[in-house]
Amino acid sequence: MKSVLVSILLGVFVGTIAWVVYFPHMEVWQTINQFEKENGGANKLVHRKQLVGPDFDAIVKPNNDTLYSLTSLNLSNGPLVFTMPPTGERYWSMQFMALSTDVDGLVGRRTHGGKGQTFLLVDENWRGSTTDDLEIIRLPSKRYWMLARVLVTGEADLDNVYAVQDGMELKPYVEH
Image (cartoon, rainbow, N blue to C red; front, side, top):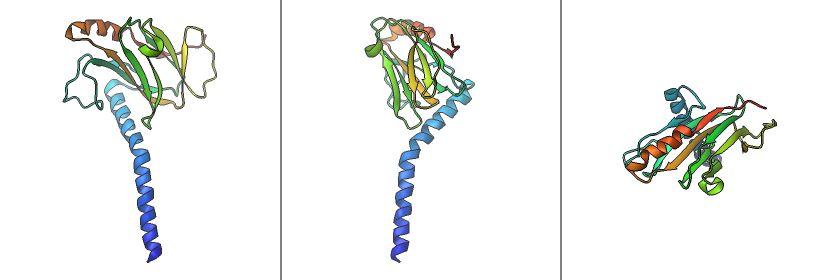
């Protein structure tokens, strides 16, 4: 009887740990798969052009003063180049969320200013070379959810933020 109880408790414990550890992975995979189905695959930058209200649920706790640009990243075929255009004093940030929901990379106005920047997104095994104008962001995995945020100061500011979004670019890297 004692061994049956121990087996049951062990099973409950292992099942709980598996759920806690792998549930975030399943949620992010579901988000990535849905995004890729709706947008024709990975590495396609999509810009949300509307401010969100309280009924918006595609992102957990979205900001209502921010426009979002997002994509699923797949570095399996090599590095990608992401360009953030100049934003001046405007707040912006870009985060790279792993399947575990860990944020493995975060850049933005506080770390890079508003002059514009071009980043080389590589996985941890990439050993290539690049030019000095590309800042390398080394990510521990090949699959990520990338989320860029740009501050909007009100309805009259939307066209300015659209211009920032239109200046963002994501493309495959061609070594020099």
